[in-house]
Image: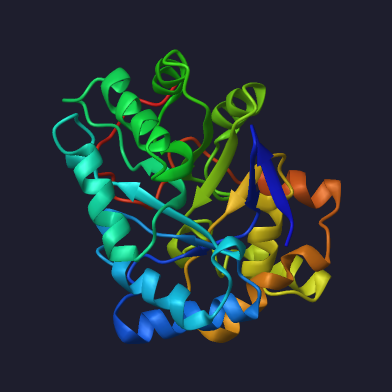
Amino acid sequence: MHKVTSFNAEIPALGMGTYTINGNRGAQLIAKALGMGYAYLDSAQMYDNEADVGKGVKLSGQPREDVFVLTKVHPENIGKKDFLNSVEESLRKLSLDHVDLLLIHWPNPNVPVVESVGELIKAKERGYTRFIGVSNFNIAQINAALATGAEIVTNQVEFHCLIDQRKVHEFLRGKGISMTAYSPLGQGRLLGHPMLASLAKKYDRSQAQIALRWLVAHDGVIAIPRSSNENRLTENLGIFEFELSEQDMKALGSLSTPSQRFVDWYYSPQWD
């Protein structure tokens, strides 16, 4: 599996998103995905599936050190009062003594960045996580996080070929921070686009593979597609078996606009 390096973290460039993947069936699917070659699971308190993710890790039989587990703290829990307690609860649900990466899921306008990131640092100091990061932070908020001295290894944002994230991406790479792309297929809305269909035929690949390959070809970008279909999970692993030409990379990038988001925002920060 290809990896992205940020500070001392080595993060698989392709992960398995687990939103809506829950219950015994979800745990079994996660175990199968790990057996296929996935090594990165993305969960969150908000997804209400941490126990199922933990069960999937156990069912897989994979050594703990071979599975990169991420969870995210609910925005209502990122203040001093609830942060560490909520992380301890997440670890109990996951049946793990630590996660590999812990993120603030969304900035909360009622909690200063310095406070929430301070709690994130404490979680790392207590050994609850190996690395820390954020999700849905804009440039100003990232700067505020970095001003605390925190080693932020990733910012997880919606990213696909229909949304222009160049400014955020360039800023993050300038700081040595990776960018993790959630909803990398626009929640399925990218599939069927004429350009993706054309390129899929040209490269003899699926449209999803073209869209994901475009993402991970960017410096320091990680993709975390979610799928409950075993065939698609296998297919996604094939994105490192081919490359898109520079011309085709630019053509897909030309589809982007600043506002083409498909995720309903929990909080809507003003993006720089």
